[in-house]
Image (tube, rainbow, N blue to C red; front, top):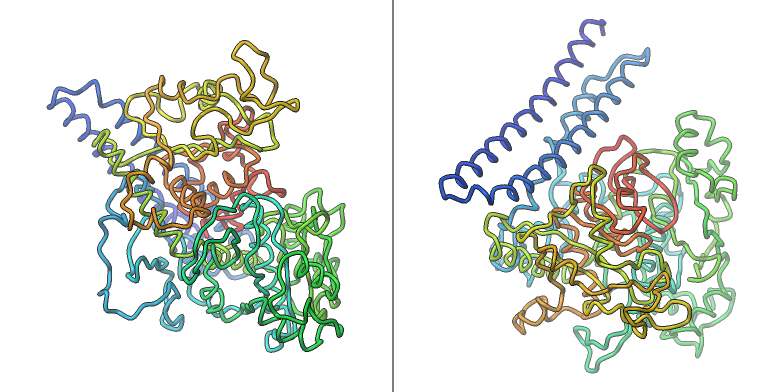
Length: 624
Protein backbone atom coordinates (compact mmCIF):
# COMPACT_ATOMS: atom_id res chain seq x y z
CA UNK A 1 0.00 0.00 0.00
CA UNK A 2 1.39 3.42 -0.91
CA UNK A 3 1.96 6.06 1.75
CA UNK A 4 -0.76 8.32 0.34
CA UNK A 5 -3.30 5.52 0.44
CA UNK A 6 -2.38 4.80 4.05
CA UNK A 7 -3.02 8.41 4.91
CA UNK A 8 -6.33 8.29 3.06
CA UNK A 9 -7.46 5.28 5.11
CA UNK A 10 -6.47 6.94 8.40
CA UNK A 11 -8.10 10.27 7.58
CA UNK A 12 -11.29 8.61 6.37
CA UNK A 13 -11.68 6.46 9.46
CA UNK A 14 -10.91 9.29 11.87
CA UNK A 15 -13.39 11.48 10.01
CA UNK A 16 -16.12 8.86 10.42
CA UNK A 17 -15.49 8.61 14.15
CA UNK A 18 -15.51 12.36 14.73
CA UNK A 19 -18.67 12.78 12.64
CA UNK A 20 -20.41 10.15 14.81
CA UNK A 21 -19.40 11.93 18.01
CA UNK A 22 -20.36 15.34 16.55
CA UNK A 23 -23.84 14.11 15.62
CA UNK A 24 -24.37 12.77 19.14
CA UNK A 25 -23.24 16.04 20.76
CA UNK A 26 -25.45 18.03 18.35
CA UNK A 27 -28.41 15.83 19.30
CA UNK A 28 -27.76 16.43 23.00
CA UNK A 29 -27.40 20.21 22.47
CA UNK A 30 -30.80 20.31 20.79
CA UNK A 31 -32.25 18.24 23.62
CA UNK A 32 -30.86 20.62 26.25
CA UNK A 33 -32.18 23.59 24.29
CA UNK A 34 -35.64 22.03 24.23
CA UNK A 35 -35.51 21.51 27.99
CA UNK A 36 -34.58 25.15 28.53
CA UNK A 37 -37.25 26.43 26.12
CA UNK A 38 -39.96 24.30 27.68
CA UNK A 39 -38.95 25.40 31.16
CA UNK A 40 -39.02 29.09 30.22
CA UNK A 41 -42.42 28.79 28.53
CA UNK A 42 -43.87 27.17 31.65
CA UNK A 43 -42.37 29.76 33.94
CA UNK A 44 -40.09 27.20 35.57
CA UNK A 45 -36.72 28.47 34.47
CA UNK A 46 -35.39 28.04 38.01
CA UNK A 47 -35.93 24.32 37.74
CA UNK A 48 -33.93 23.65 34.59
CA UNK A 49 -30.59 23.34 36.39
CA UNK A 50 -31.19 19.73 37.39
CA UNK A 51 -32.23 18.42 33.95
CA UNK A 52 -29.22 20.25 32.49
CA UNK A 53 -27.00 18.73 35.17
CA UNK A 54 -28.29 15.21 34.52
CA UNK A 55 -27.99 15.46 30.75
CA UNK A 56 -24.54 17.03 30.99
CA UNK A 57 -23.46 14.16 33.23
CA UNK A 58 -24.65 11.72 30.57
CA UNK A 59 -22.95 13.70 27.78
CA UNK A 60 -19.68 13.77 29.71
CA UNK A 61 -19.87 10.04 30.33
CA UNK A 62 -20.66 9.31 26.68
CA UNK A 63 -17.88 11.53 25.38
CA UNK A 64 -15.37 9.95 27.76
CA UNK A 65 -16.33 6.48 26.55
CA UNK A 66 -16.23 7.49 22.90
CA UNK A 67 -12.88 9.23 23.26
CA UNK A 68 -11.51 6.10 24.94
CA UNK A 69 -12.69 4.12 21.92
CA UNK A 70 -11.17 6.71 19.56
CA UNK A 71 -7.78 6.46 21.29
CA UNK A 72 -7.96 2.67 21.06
CA UNK A 73 -8.82 2.80 17.36
CA UNK A 74 -6.00 5.23 16.59
CA UNK A 75 -3.54 3.02 18.46
CA UNK A 76 -4.76 -0.02 16.52
CA UNK A 77 -4.33 1.80 13.19
CA UNK A 78 -0.90 3.04 14.24
CA UNK A 79 0.17 -0.50 15.10
CA UNK A 80 -1.03 -1.71 11.71
CA UNK A 81 1.02 0.86 9.82
CA UNK A 82 4.08 0.50 12.07
CA UNK A 83 4.94 -2.83 10.50
CA UNK A 84 6.52 -3.54 7.14
CA UNK A 85 3.94 -6.15 6.23
CA UNK A 86 0.98 -5.51 3.93
CA UNK A 87 -1.69 -3.63 5.85
CA UNK A 88 -4.97 -5.49 6.28
CA UNK A 89 -7.46 -2.70 5.59
CA UNK A 90 -10.42 -5.00 6.22
CA UNK A 91 -9.21 -5.81 9.74
CA UNK A 92 -8.91 -2.08 10.45
CA UNK A 93 -12.40 -1.46 9.15
CA UNK A 94 -13.85 -4.24 11.31
CA UNK A 95 -12.00 -3.01 14.39
CA UNK A 96 -13.04 0.61 14.02
CA UNK A 97 -16.54 0.24 12.64
CA UNK A 98 -17.60 -2.94 14.44
CA UNK A 99 -19.88 -0.96 16.79
CA UNK A 100 -21.76 2.29 16.56
CA UNK A 101 -20.64 5.07 18.91
CA UNK A 102 -21.56 4.45 22.53
CA UNK A 103 -24.64 6.43 23.49
CA UNK A 104 -25.58 5.64 27.10
CA UNK A 105 -29.19 6.78 27.09
CA UNK A 106 -30.64 3.74 28.79
CA UNK A 107 -30.28 5.11 32.33
CA UNK A 108 -32.92 7.69 31.35
CA UNK A 109 -35.26 5.18 29.74
CA UNK A 110 -38.30 3.65 31.36
CA UNK A 111 -39.63 1.84 28.33
CA UNK A 112 -37.87 -1.43 28.97
CA UNK A 113 -39.44 -2.72 32.14
CA UNK A 114 -40.83 -6.01 33.34
CA UNK A 115 -43.93 -4.51 34.94
CA UNK A 116 -45.51 -3.27 31.74
CA UNK A 117 -43.48 -5.09 29.08
CA UNK A 118 -45.14 -7.24 26.44
CA UNK A 119 -43.61 -10.46 25.16
CA UNK A 120 -41.58 -10.04 22.00
CA UNK A 121 -42.86 -13.37 20.77
CA UNK A 122 -46.15 -15.16 21.09
CA UNK A 123 -46.61 -16.85 24.45
CA UNK A 124 -47.44 -20.03 22.54
CA UNK A 125 -43.91 -20.18 21.17
CA UNK A 126 -42.23 -23.22 22.80
CA UNK A 127 -39.34 -21.54 24.64
CA UNK A 128 -38.51 -23.26 27.90
CA UNK A 129 -35.18 -21.72 28.85
CA UNK A 130 -32.80 -18.91 28.05
CA UNK A 131 -30.58 -21.10 25.90
CA UNK A 132 -29.45 -19.33 22.73
CA UNK A 133 -30.75 -20.46 19.36
CA UNK A 134 -28.75 -22.70 17.03
CA UNK A 135 -25.36 -20.96 16.87
CA UNK A 136 -24.97 -21.94 13.22
CA UNK A 137 -27.72 -19.43 12.46
CA UNK A 138 -25.90 -16.60 14.23
CA UNK A 139 -23.94 -14.51 11.75
CA UNK A 140 -23.70 -11.36 13.85
CA UNK A 141 -23.38 -10.59 17.53
CA UNK A 142 -26.77 -9.95 19.06
CA UNK A 143 -28.40 -9.17 22.35
CA UNK A 144 -28.98 -11.95 24.85
CA UNK A 145 -32.31 -13.57 25.72
CA UNK A 146 -34.30 -13.18 28.95
CA UNK A 147 -37.28 -15.39 29.80
CA UNK A 148 -39.74 -14.22 32.47
CA UNK A 149 -42.80 -16.32 33.36
CA UNK A 150 -42.25 -18.42 30.24
CA UNK A 151 -42.17 -15.40 27.89
CA UNK A 152 -39.25 -13.71 26.19
CA UNK A 153 -39.07 -10.11 27.34
CA UNK A 154 -37.01 -7.08 26.52
CA UNK A 155 -35.37 -5.40 29.48
CA UNK A 156 -32.61 -2.92 30.20
CA UNK A 157 -31.01 -5.44 32.59
CA UNK A 158 -29.78 -7.55 29.65
CA UNK A 159 -26.05 -7.12 29.18
CA UNK A 160 -25.15 -10.62 28.00
CA UNK A 161 -24.79 -11.34 24.31
CA UNK A 162 -24.92 -14.15 21.79
CA UNK A 163 -21.57 -14.04 20.02
CA UNK A 164 -21.06 -16.04 16.80
CA UNK A 165 -18.81 -19.02 17.44
CA UNK A 166 -18.63 -18.64 21.22
CA UNK A 167 -21.18 -21.36 22.05
CA UNK A 168 -19.14 -23.99 20.18
CA UNK A 169 -15.67 -22.85 21.24
CA UNK A 170 -13.43 -25.55 22.71
CA UNK A 171 -10.12 -24.85 24.38
CA UNK A 172 -7.43 -25.48 21.74
CA UNK A 173 -4.71 -26.28 24.27
CA UNK A 174 -6.08 -29.51 25.70
CA UNK A 175 -6.30 -32.86 23.91
CA UNK A 176 -8.99 -34.50 25.98
CA UNK A 177 -12.34 -32.90 25.20
CA UNK A 178 -13.34 -36.36 24.04
CA UNK A 179 -12.12 -37.68 27.39
CA UNK A 180 -13.73 -35.07 29.63
CA UNK A 181 -15.68 -37.86 31.33
CA UNK A 182 -12.34 -39.02 32.74
CA UNK A 183 -11.02 -35.63 33.89
CA UNK A 184 -12.74 -33.84 36.77
CA UNK A 185 -12.62 -30.73 38.91
CA UNK A 186 -14.43 -30.78 42.26
CA UNK A 187 -14.55 -27.85 44.64
CA UNK A 188 -15.83 -26.60 47.96
CA UNK A 189 -17.66 -23.32 48.28
CA UNK A 190 -15.52 -20.49 49.62
CA UNK A 191 -16.08 -19.81 53.31
CA UNK A 192 -16.65 -16.07 52.83
CA UNK A 193 -19.70 -14.10 51.76
CA UNK A 194 -21.60 -14.74 48.55
CA UNK A 195 -19.50 -12.56 46.28
CA UNK A 196 -16.35 -14.33 47.48
CA UNK A 197 -18.07 -17.59 46.53
CA UNK A 198 -19.06 -16.19 43.13
CA UNK A 199 -15.55 -14.89 42.48
CA UNK A 200 -13.97 -18.30 43.07
CA UNK A 201 -16.67 -20.03 41.00
CA UNK A 202 -15.95 -17.79 38.00
CA UNK A 203 -12.24 -18.64 38.16
CA UNK A 204 -13.00 -22.37 38.42
CA UNK A 205 -15.40 -22.18 35.48
CA UNK A 206 -12.65 -20.64 33.34
CA UNK A 207 -10.04 -23.17 34.47
CA UNK A 208 -12.39 -26.12 33.87
CA UNK A 209 -13.19 -24.97 30.33
CA UNK A 210 -9.56 -24.20 29.48
CA UNK A 211 -8.46 -27.62 30.74
CA UNK A 212 -11.32 -29.42 29.00
CA UNK A 213 -12.41 -30.91 32.33
CA UNK A 214 -15.82 -31.79 33.70
CA UNK A 215 -16.82 -29.45 36.52
CA UNK A 216 -18.63 -31.28 39.30
CA UNK A 217 -21.34 -29.14 40.90
CA UNK A 218 -21.62 -29.81 44.66
CA UNK A 219 -24.98 -30.14 46.43
CA UNK A 220 -26.60 -27.33 48.37
CA UNK A 221 -24.70 -26.34 51.52
CA UNK A 222 -24.87 -23.84 54.35
CA UNK A 223 -23.43 -20.65 52.84
CA UNK A 224 -22.28 -17.75 54.98
CA UNK A 225 -24.95 -15.03 55.34
CA UNK A 226 -27.31 -16.91 53.00
CA UNK A 227 -29.29 -18.93 55.51
CA UNK A 228 -32.81 -17.60 55.28
CA UNK A 229 -35.38 -20.43 55.25
CA UNK A 230 -37.04 -20.91 51.88
CA UNK A 231 -38.69 -23.45 49.63
CA UNK A 232 -37.33 -24.38 46.24
CA UNK A 233 -39.71 -25.29 43.43
CA UNK A 234 -40.21 -28.94 44.39
CA UNK A 235 -39.62 -28.68 48.15
CA UNK A 236 -42.21 -29.79 50.67
CA UNK A 237 -40.45 -28.17 53.62
CA UNK A 238 -38.39 -25.05 54.13
CA UNK A 239 -34.61 -25.31 54.37
CA UNK A 240 -31.67 -22.93 54.58
CA UNK A 241 -29.14 -24.58 52.24
CA UNK A 242 -28.17 -22.96 48.95
CA UNK A 243 -26.04 -24.07 46.01
CA UNK A 244 -24.66 -23.37 42.54
CA UNK A 245 -27.93 -24.03 40.71
CA UNK A 246 -29.80 -21.56 42.91
CA UNK A 247 -27.87 -18.71 41.31
CA UNK A 248 -26.62 -19.85 37.89
CA UNK A 249 -28.24 -21.58 34.93
CA UNK A 250 -26.66 -25.02 34.82
CA UNK A 251 -28.58 -25.87 31.64
CA UNK A 252 -27.09 -22.82 29.94
CA UNK A 253 -23.58 -23.97 30.88
CA UNK A 254 -24.36 -27.50 29.73
CA UNK A 255 -25.47 -26.14 26.36
CA UNK A 256 -21.93 -24.92 25.66
CA UNK A 257 -20.07 -27.41 23.46
CA UNK A 258 -16.74 -26.80 25.14
CA UNK A 259 -17.97 -27.00 28.72
CA UNK A 260 -18.83 -30.12 30.67
CA UNK A 261 -20.89 -30.32 33.87
CA UNK A 262 -21.80 -33.16 36.22
CA UNK A 263 -23.76 -33.07 39.47
CA UNK A 264 -22.07 -34.43 42.57
CA UNK A 265 -24.41 -37.40 43.07
CA UNK A 266 -23.76 -38.53 39.48
CA UNK A 267 -20.00 -38.11 39.98
CA UNK A 268 -20.03 -40.15 43.19
CA UNK A 269 -22.14 -42.84 41.57
CA UNK A 270 -19.86 -43.01 38.53
CA UNK A 271 -16.48 -42.67 40.22
CA UNK A 272 -16.88 -43.05 43.98
CA UNK A 273 -19.23 -45.97 44.55
CA UNK A 274 -17.45 -47.96 41.86
CA UNK A 275 -14.05 -47.45 43.52
CA UNK A 276 -12.76 -45.31 40.68
CA UNK A 277 -11.16 -42.83 43.08
CA UNK A 278 -8.13 -44.81 44.27
CA UNK A 279 -10.39 -47.63 45.44
CA UNK A 280 -11.95 -45.49 48.18
CA UNK A 281 -15.73 -45.24 48.39
CA UNK A 282 -17.69 -42.21 49.67
CA UNK A 283 -19.15 -42.10 53.21
CA UNK A 284 -21.72 -44.84 53.59
CA UNK A 285 -20.82 -45.89 50.05
CA UNK A 286 -23.57 -43.48 49.03
CA UNK A 287 -23.85 -40.96 46.26
CA UNK A 288 -25.73 -38.65 48.65
CA UNK A 289 -22.68 -37.69 50.73
CA UNK A 290 -22.94 -34.15 52.03
CA UNK A 291 -21.21 -31.47 54.11
CA UNK A 292 -17.88 -31.91 55.89
CA UNK A 293 -17.87 -35.66 55.32
CA UNK A 294 -18.05 -35.08 51.56
CA UNK A 295 -15.29 -32.46 51.61
CA UNK A 296 -12.98 -34.75 53.61
CA UNK A 297 -13.59 -37.62 51.22
CA UNK A 298 -12.88 -35.51 48.12
CA UNK A 299 -9.66 -34.22 49.68
CA UNK A 300 -8.52 -37.77 50.44
CA UNK A 301 -9.10 -39.15 46.95
CA UNK A 302 -7.92 -36.15 44.87
CA UNK A 303 -4.87 -36.47 42.61
CA UNK A 304 -4.12 -32.77 43.16
CA UNK A 305 -5.21 -30.08 45.62
CA UNK A 306 -3.73 -26.86 44.21
CA UNK A 307 -2.44 -24.21 46.60
CA UNK A 308 -2.83 -21.25 44.28
CA UNK A 309 -3.90 -18.51 46.67
CA UNK A 310 -2.32 -15.18 45.69
CA UNK A 311 -0.86 -16.58 42.47
CA UNK A 312 -2.02 -16.94 38.87
CA UNK A 313 -2.01 -19.65 36.23
CA UNK A 314 -0.59 -19.26 32.72
CA UNK A 315 -2.02 -21.17 29.77
CA UNK A 316 -0.04 -21.60 26.52
CA UNK A 317 -1.22 -20.71 23.04
CA UNK A 318 -0.52 -24.19 21.68
CA UNK A 319 -1.09 -27.69 23.12
CA UNK A 320 1.92 -29.30 24.76
CA UNK A 321 3.73 -26.01 25.37
CA UNK A 322 4.23 -26.53 29.10
CA UNK A 323 7.17 -24.20 29.60
CA UNK A 324 6.57 -20.60 30.64
CA UNK A 325 9.96 -19.46 29.36
CA UNK A 326 9.25 -20.77 25.86
CA UNK A 327 5.84 -19.13 25.97
CA UNK A 328 7.48 -15.79 26.74
CA UNK A 329 9.92 -15.76 23.83
CA UNK A 330 7.35 -13.73 21.97
CA UNK A 331 7.92 -10.12 23.10
CA UNK A 332 4.23 -9.23 22.81
CA UNK A 333 3.25 -12.19 25.00
CA UNK A 334 5.95 -11.26 27.51
CA UNK A 335 4.70 -7.67 27.73
CA UNK A 336 1.13 -8.85 28.37
CA UNK A 337 2.37 -11.43 30.88
CA UNK A 338 4.37 -8.90 32.90
CA UNK A 339 1.50 -6.42 32.95
CA UNK A 340 -0.88 -9.20 33.98
CA UNK A 341 1.26 -10.78 36.69
CA UNK A 342 2.86 -7.74 38.27
CA UNK A 343 4.47 -8.53 41.62
CA UNK A 344 2.80 -11.95 41.67
CA UNK A 345 5.39 -13.25 39.18
CA UNK A 346 7.95 -13.30 42.02
CA UNK A 347 5.71 -15.74 43.93
CA UNK A 348 6.00 -18.25 41.10
CA UNK A 349 3.67 -18.58 38.15
CA UNK A 350 1.53 -21.70 37.93
CA UNK A 351 1.98 -23.18 34.48
CA UNK A 352 -0.57 -25.48 32.93
CA UNK A 353 1.67 -28.53 32.65
CA UNK A 354 1.51 -32.20 31.81
CA UNK A 355 0.85 -33.17 35.43
CA UNK A 356 -2.23 -30.94 35.60
CA UNK A 357 -3.33 -32.21 32.22
CA UNK A 358 -3.09 -35.88 33.17
CA UNK A 359 -4.59 -35.71 36.68
CA UNK A 360 -7.80 -37.70 36.88
CA UNK A 361 -9.34 -35.66 39.70
CA UNK A 362 -8.38 -32.14 40.86
CA UNK A 363 -10.04 -30.88 44.04
CA UNK A 364 -10.15 -27.27 45.28
CA UNK A 365 -10.80 -26.91 49.03
CA UNK A 366 -12.33 -23.58 50.04
CA UNK A 367 -9.92 -22.43 52.72
CA UNK A 368 -6.40 -21.19 53.49
CA UNK A 369 -3.87 -21.57 50.65
CA UNK A 370 -6.42 -23.30 48.44
CA UNK A 371 -8.72 -20.26 48.17
CA UNK A 372 -8.95 -18.56 44.77
CA UNK A 373 -9.98 -15.14 45.95
CA UNK A 374 -9.21 -13.37 42.68
CA UNK A 375 -11.18 -12.20 39.69
CA UNK A 376 -11.15 -14.66 36.81
CA UNK A 377 -9.62 -12.12 34.40
CA UNK A 378 -6.71 -11.58 36.80
CA UNK A 379 -6.27 -15.25 37.70
CA UNK A 380 -5.95 -17.03 34.34
CA UNK A 381 -3.44 -15.66 31.82
CA UNK A 382 -3.66 -16.86 28.22
CA UNK A 383 -0.74 -16.43 25.84
CA UNK A 384 -3.29 -16.10 23.04
CA UNK A 385 -5.13 -12.76 23.48
CA UNK A 386 -8.11 -14.15 21.57
CA UNK A 387 -8.51 -16.79 24.29
CA UNK A 388 -8.18 -14.11 26.96
CA UNK A 389 -11.06 -12.20 25.38
CA UNK A 390 -13.16 -15.33 24.92
CA UNK A 391 -13.08 -16.18 28.63
CA UNK A 392 -14.12 -12.66 29.58
CA UNK A 393 -17.14 -13.08 27.30
CA UNK A 394 -17.73 -16.63 28.53
CA UNK A 395 -18.13 -15.45 32.12
CA UNK A 396 -20.28 -12.50 31.03
CA UNK A 397 -22.64 -14.59 28.91
CA UNK A 398 -22.73 -17.98 30.68
CA UNK A 399 -22.02 -17.20 34.34
CA UNK A 400 -24.74 -14.60 34.74
CA UNK A 401 -27.47 -14.90 37.33
CA UNK A 402 -30.28 -17.19 36.22
CA UNK A 403 -33.41 -15.75 34.65
CA UNK A 404 -35.56 -15.96 37.82
CA UNK A 405 -33.15 -13.60 39.55
CA UNK A 406 -32.76 -11.31 36.53
CA UNK A 407 -36.53 -11.01 36.11
CA UNK A 408 -37.17 -10.20 39.77
CA UNK A 409 -34.32 -7.67 39.63
CA UNK A 410 -35.82 -6.12 36.50
CA UNK A 411 -39.15 -5.77 38.28
CA UNK A 412 -37.49 -4.06 41.25
CA UNK A 413 -35.62 -1.76 38.87
CA UNK A 414 -38.83 -0.86 37.06
CA UNK A 415 -40.46 0.09 40.37
CA UNK A 416 -37.51 2.32 41.27
CA UNK A 417 -37.77 4.09 37.90
CA UNK A 418 -41.53 4.53 38.32
CA UNK A 419 -40.89 6.00 41.76
CA UNK A 420 -38.43 8.49 40.24
CA UNK A 421 -40.94 9.45 37.55
CA UNK A 422 -43.62 10.07 40.15
CA UNK A 423 -41.28 12.32 42.16
CA UNK A 424 -40.19 14.41 39.19
CA UNK A 425 -41.25 13.55 35.61
CA UNK A 426 -38.45 15.72 34.22
CA UNK A 427 -35.96 13.17 35.58
CA UNK A 428 -37.26 10.61 33.04
CA UNK A 429 -36.87 7.81 35.58
CA UNK A 430 -33.26 8.66 36.40
CA UNK A 431 -31.98 7.60 39.83
CA UNK A 432 -28.71 7.19 41.73
CA UNK A 433 -27.51 4.35 43.94
CA UNK A 434 -25.21 3.68 46.88
CA UNK A 435 -23.95 0.50 48.49
CA UNK A 436 -23.14 1.10 52.16
CA UNK A 437 -21.61 -1.92 53.88
CA UNK A 438 -21.52 -1.93 57.65
CA UNK A 439 -22.38 -4.75 60.05
CA UNK A 440 -19.63 -7.33 60.49
CA UNK A 441 -17.47 -5.90 57.69
CA UNK A 442 -13.86 -6.27 58.84
CA UNK A 443 -12.54 -3.14 57.12
CA UNK A 444 -13.30 -0.55 59.76
CA UNK A 445 -11.92 2.48 57.94
CA UNK A 446 -14.68 2.34 55.30
CA UNK A 447 -17.52 2.27 57.83
CA UNK A 448 -18.07 6.02 57.97
CA UNK A 449 -20.85 8.46 58.82
CA UNK A 450 -23.36 9.74 56.29
CA UNK A 451 -22.09 13.35 56.60
CA UNK A 452 -18.63 12.02 55.71
CA UNK A 453 -20.05 10.15 52.72
CA UNK A 454 -21.61 13.40 51.49
CA UNK A 455 -18.30 15.22 51.91
CA UNK A 456 -16.44 12.47 50.06
CA UNK A 457 -18.77 12.32 47.07
CA UNK A 458 -17.25 15.28 45.27
CA UNK A 459 -15.39 15.56 41.99
CA UNK A 460 -11.88 17.03 42.26
CA UNK A 461 -13.33 20.45 41.35
CA UNK A 462 -15.73 20.29 44.31
CA UNK A 463 -18.93 19.55 42.37
CA UNK A 464 -21.24 17.01 43.99
CA UNK A 465 -21.08 13.62 42.25
CA UNK A 466 -24.70 12.92 43.17
CA UNK A 467 -26.73 16.16 42.87
CA UNK A 468 -27.75 17.64 46.21
CA UNK A 469 -31.31 18.79 45.55
CA UNK A 470 -34.95 17.81 45.91
CA UNK A 471 -35.10 15.81 42.68
CA UNK A 472 -32.52 13.12 43.43
CA UNK A 473 -33.88 9.66 44.16
CA UNK A 474 -31.10 7.61 45.74
CA UNK A 475 -31.48 3.85 46.13
CA UNK A 476 -29.43 2.55 49.06
CA UNK A 477 -28.36 -1.09 49.20
CA UNK A 478 -27.19 -1.77 52.74
CA UNK A 479 -27.08 -4.29 55.55
CA UNK A 480 -28.15 -1.46 57.89
CA UNK A 481 -31.44 -0.02 56.59
CA UNK A 482 -32.34 1.34 60.05
CA UNK A 483 -29.20 3.51 60.06
CA UNK A 484 -27.95 2.41 63.49
CA UNK A 485 -24.84 0.42 62.47
CA UNK A 486 -26.35 -2.77 63.84
CA UNK A 487 -23.77 -5.51 64.47
CA UNK A 488 -20.92 -3.00 64.16
CA UNK A 489 -18.12 -3.58 66.66
CA UNK A 490 -14.90 -1.76 67.47
CA UNK A 491 -12.48 -2.19 70.36
CA UNK A 492 -14.45 -5.25 71.43
CA UNK A 493 -17.67 -3.36 72.04
CA UNK A 494 -20.88 -2.87 70.10
CA UNK A 495 -21.08 0.52 68.38
CA UNK A 496 -24.78 0.70 69.25
CA UNK A 497 -23.87 1.01 72.96
CA UNK A 498 -21.90 4.22 72.42
CA UNK A 499 -23.56 7.51 73.36
CA UNK A 500 -23.30 10.56 71.06
CA UNK A 501 -20.81 12.26 73.41
CA UNK A 502 -18.58 9.16 73.63
CA UNK A 503 -15.43 8.82 71.59
CA UNK A 504 -16.25 6.77 68.53
CA UNK A 505 -13.36 4.51 67.51
CA UNK A 506 -12.70 3.71 63.86
CA UNK A 507 -15.45 1.42 62.63
CA UNK A 508 -18.14 3.11 64.74
CA UNK A 509 -19.42 6.10 62.73
CA UNK A 510 -20.48 8.99 64.94
CA UNK A 511 -23.66 9.47 62.89
CA UNK A 512 -24.84 6.27 61.18
CA UNK A 513 -28.34 7.63 60.58
CA UNK A 514 -29.60 8.68 57.15
CA UNK A 515 -30.50 12.19 58.35
CA UNK A 516 -27.65 13.89 56.45
CA UNK A 517 -28.94 12.42 53.18
CA UNK A 518 -32.45 13.64 53.87
CA UNK A 519 -31.16 17.08 54.84
CA UNK A 520 -29.35 17.19 51.48
CA UNK A 521 -32.72 16.83 49.76
CA UNK A 522 -32.28 13.23 48.64
CA UNK A 523 -35.29 10.94 48.41
CA UNK A 524 -33.75 7.73 49.78
CA UNK A 525 -35.20 4.30 49.17
CA UNK A 526 -34.42 0.80 50.43
CA UNK A 527 -35.39 -2.68 49.26
CA UNK A 528 -37.99 -2.99 52.00
CA UNK A 529 -39.82 0.06 50.65
CA UNK A 530 -40.58 -1.85 47.47
CA UNK A 531 -41.09 -5.29 49.01
CA UNK A 532 -43.91 -4.11 51.26
CA UNK A 533 -45.88 -2.65 48.35
CA UNK A 534 -45.27 -5.45 45.84
CA UNK A 535 -48.24 -7.74 45.07
CA UNK A 536 -48.05 -11.16 46.68
CA UNK A 537 -47.80 -12.86 43.27
CA UNK A 538 -45.12 -10.52 41.89
CA UNK A 539 -41.69 -11.82 40.92
CA UNK A 540 -40.18 -9.55 43.55
CA UNK A 541 -42.25 -10.96 46.41
CA UNK A 542 -41.82 -14.55 45.22
CA UNK A 543 -38.02 -14.28 44.93
CA UNK A 544 -35.92 -16.43 47.26
CA UNK A 545 -35.00 -14.04 50.12
CA UNK A 546 -31.40 -15.22 49.88
CA UNK A 547 -31.21 -13.65 46.41
CA UNK A 548 -32.28 -10.17 47.51
CA UNK A 549 -28.69 -8.97 47.38
CA UNK A 550 -28.47 -10.07 43.76
CA UNK A 551 -31.66 -8.15 42.94
CA UNK A 552 -30.18 -5.03 44.49
CA UNK A 553 -26.98 -5.42 42.49
CA UNK A 554 -29.08 -5.44 39.32
CA UNK A 555 -30.76 -2.18 40.34
CA UNK A 556 -27.45 -0.53 41.24
CA UNK A 557 -25.96 -1.64 37.92
CA UNK A 558 -28.42 0.60 36.05
CA UNK A 559 -28.21 3.76 38.19
CA UNK A 560 -27.04 6.93 36.43
CA UNK A 561 -24.28 7.17 39.04
CA UNK A 562 -23.28 4.56 41.61
CA UNK A 563 -20.94 4.83 44.59
CA UNK A 564 -20.00 1.84 46.71
CA UNK A 565 -17.87 0.65 49.60
CA UNK A 566 -14.19 0.00 48.94
CA UNK A 567 -13.00 -3.56 49.75
CA UNK A 568 -16.54 -4.89 49.28
CA UNK A 569 -16.81 -7.62 46.65
CA UNK A 570 -20.54 -6.81 46.42
CA UNK A 571 -19.67 -3.27 45.33
CA UNK A 572 -16.98 -4.69 43.06
CA UNK A 573 -19.40 -6.93 41.18
CA UNK A 574 -21.79 -4.02 40.68
CA UNK A 575 -18.86 -2.12 39.16
CA UNK A 576 -18.31 -4.95 36.67
CA UNK A 577 -22.02 -5.20 35.82
CA UNK A 578 -21.97 -1.46 35.15
CA UNK A 579 -18.93 -2.01 32.96
CA UNK A 580 -20.88 -4.56 30.91
CA UNK A 581 -23.60 -1.93 30.48
CA UNK A 582 -21.09 0.76 29.46
CA UNK A 583 -21.45 2.58 32.80
CA UNK A 584 -18.12 1.62 34.35
CA UNK A 585 -16.80 5.18 34.28
CA UNK A 586 -19.90 6.48 36.11
CA UNK A 587 -18.92 4.42 39.16
CA UNK A 588 -17.27 5.72 42.33
CA UNK A 589 -16.50 4.87 45.95
CA UNK A 590 -17.85 6.88 48.87
CA UNK A 591 -15.00 5.60 51.06
CA UNK A 592 -12.38 8.14 52.14
CA UNK A 593 -9.26 8.16 49.90
CA UNK A 594 -10.86 5.87 47.28
CA UNK A 595 -13.58 8.01 45.67
CA UNK A 596 -12.04 8.27 42.19
CA UNK A 597 -10.27 4.90 42.09
CA UNK A 598 -12.60 3.45 39.41
CA UNK A 599 -11.33 6.17 37.05
CA UNK A 600 -7.67 5.16 37.44
CA UNK A 601 -5.83 4.70 34.16
CA UNK A 602 -4.64 1.28 35.30
CA UNK A 603 -7.01 -1.31 33.83
CA UNK A 604 -6.06 -4.58 35.52
CA UNK A 605 -5.00 -5.57 39.01
CA UNK A 606 -5.20 -8.56 41.31
CA UNK A 607 -6.78 -9.27 44.65
CA UNK A 608 -10.41 -8.92 45.62
CA UNK A 609 -10.74 -5.34 46.92
CA UNK A 610 -12.12 -3.92 43.67
CA UNK A 611 -12.86 -4.75 40.02
CA UNK A 612 -10.96 -3.50 36.97
CA UNK A 613 -11.76 -2.54 33.38
CA UNK A 614 -10.13 -5.77 32.21
CA UNK A 615 -13.29 -7.50 33.38
CA UNK A 616 -15.41 -5.85 30.67
CA UNK A 617 -12.88 -4.74 28.04
CA UNK A 618 -10.41 -6.51 25.80
CA UNK A 619 -6.66 -5.85 25.64
CA UNK A 620 -7.30 -2.84 23.34
CA UNK A 621 -9.71 -1.24 25.82
CA UNK A 622 -12.81 -2.05 23.75
CA UNK A 623 -15.98 -3.22 25.50
CA UNK A 624 -16.19 -6.98 25.10
